[in-house]
Image 1 (cartoon, rainbow, N blue to C red):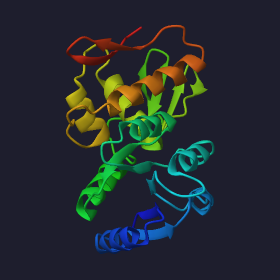
Image 2 (image 1 turned 90 degrees about the horizontal axis):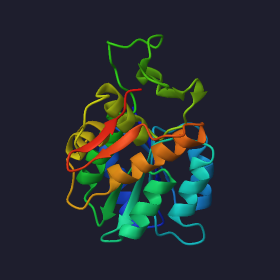
Image 3 (image 1 turned 90 degrees about the vertical axis):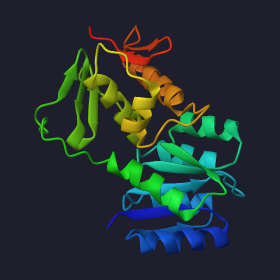
Amino acid sequence: MSKVLLIDDDIELVDMLKEYLEQEKFEVRVAYDGESGVAEALTNQYAIVVLDVMMPRLNGLETLRRIRAKSNLPVLMLTAKGDDTDRIIGLELGADDYVPKPCTPRELTARVRAILRRTVIDNPDHSPYSPLAVGALSMWPEQRRATWSGRPLELTSSEFNLLEVLARNAGKPVSKQHLSEQGLGRPLARFDRNIDVHLSSIRQKISTLGSDKSCIQTVYRLGYQFIKE
């Protein structure tokens, strides 16, 4: 049973989401403010956090920042409908995905499942001892572990999934639609910038490990490509 942490000060909404998630066989705990949410998230008990942006005292973005400082636990953000700024900032801070409010419990549960399906991947082609290796990149999908030139590459769940899709198709352009479906578990929405923000973050993380050129290139009108060295 996957354990979900809901961090939101909207008691009525939280009660509704909690009831639905429990009916769908999730175990759910609730934190009604960011400070207690951070403390709970860092206990290593949870498979995923569902985090609201708009909270008093410690808002969702700062809560996310504090979680990401110490953990790569998957985080699904709840954002105000039409608020692109909070969505982009959340993704840049390491959120795995977002759902605009108001949302239905069914929609949120589907998004939670999509993230969790890609957090633990059962791939018989690669044992924990046989990495997916392309140039300086090595990935162990079963362990959710990656290195660049032998140094640990710290990725969020969605970043790992997207990089794995690109690495498995190294040398070939991969469309944003395919990346969204295979990496995020959902079709690409109109004006959706998730892919762009996640890949920008991956590029920055790789550059901090000493790479002087981007291994992920934008292919005009086609998508993105991982460059074979």
